Amino acid sequence: MDDLLVTGGGMAGLSAALVALRAGLKVTLLEQAEVFSEVGAGIQLGPNAVRVLHDWGLEARLRAVAAFPEALCVRDARSGGLLGQLTLGAAIRQRYGQPYATLHRADLHQILLRQVLGSVDCRLRQRVQGFEQDEARVRLQTEDGARYQADALLGCDGLWSRVRAQLLADGPPVFSGDLAYRAMVPVADLPPDLRRNEVTVWLAPGLHAVNYPVRAGEWMNIIVVVEGEIPSDPESWDHAAQASRLRAALGAVHGDFDRLLQAVAEWRLWPLNVRPPMRGPREHARGRVALLGDAAHPTRPYLAQGAAMALEDAWTLGRLLEQPRWRVAGRLDWPGLLQALAQQRWRRNGWIQQRSRRNGLIFHASGPLRWGRDLAMGLLGERLIDLPELYRGPPRPV
Image 1: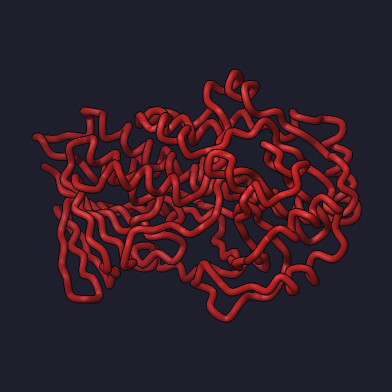
Image 2: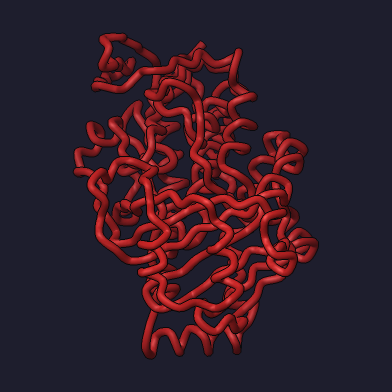
């Protein structure tokens, strides 16, 4: 039986552990935190990501916790005017075979965690110190002196990945110049006319916001992204954030948007740290070590595809593990398999990173670019917002 080490107990790590477990591998998962948990924020899952969960037999569990918006509406944050709209609900399911879902990150994390607990050797409080690999094995040591060895290592340890730091030695992420304020509000606390089952994107020069229902429609997730200076601790997801600072950055906004903001009891702050888009397969895998999810391709939240790409990475790994060609004398050819994974994934992940970065510029645009954006959305409508190349994925490994 092949042994696999996975570092990181987030979406990417749990998904990778799940597909490896289903392939009959012995998996050890190392998580540096005291407990398995996810931050209190929402995520959007397009049909491509829902397709992955359906393939894993998890669609019923998703339906129990997610909301399924009827539309994605783009509005001007100052005037409130409708700039563009994409019909979701039954229409997008008919088009792509799967729905568009919105949910709390912790709910998806729990769905995945329940699939591996009891079958995967999960170790908490294990912070990677370093690793080495040779032609036969990977050996890893944690800061507390624990040692592990396996046939392969998957670095799924997020934006500040220690596995990446050693494997690629390409330096830390850099601050993008954008700050994301996020909050959750009970839908029952909102005015009735704001309890819409839709994703609403608010655009204004230098900022944008998104709100959508989560937790089966009982809560509203809100994220507001503004330009600003980096906080003192760039590695932390959460920061205490004052509503007055956000208000000063926003300026005057439309009444609907303003009432939504007034319903927030507490904001948390997330500095958006980034890396350049992937440039080749060697940024995904080298030898017996591969990077998945944010460790490989951290993605700005302007296309709502960060979690989806982590799921797609793991799904592709699972499909490759099913192919007999990677087994030699009963053992997996890990370097060959991981290189195949890298070849399959790096272009799509790099494209998503690039598209997300471009979306940020378009969302925050002013002057002629803003006018052109609004005109294009008005003329092209759904054709501009819909993304068939994305939503028909993930591509099947060849």
